[in-house]
Amino acid sequence: MKTLVFPGTFDPITNGHLDIITRSLHLCDHLYVAIAESSRKHPVFP
Image (tube, rainbow, N blue to C red):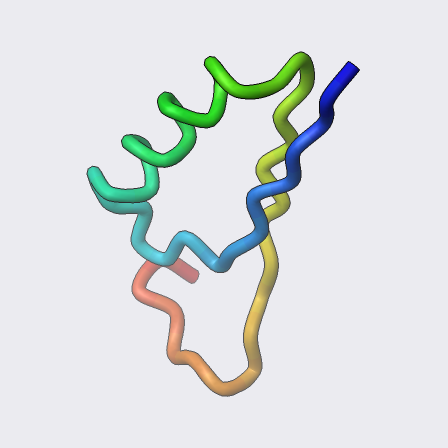
């Protein structure tokens, strides 16, 4: 059983992020998308 983690701020989420998530689903049994917050970035969507 293979598990992948895709961490990021995703602010904003892009088509590139979605493409990586979609492609990753074919490579693993479980995919966790970990949404983080960065104090160095100014959020687009607070």
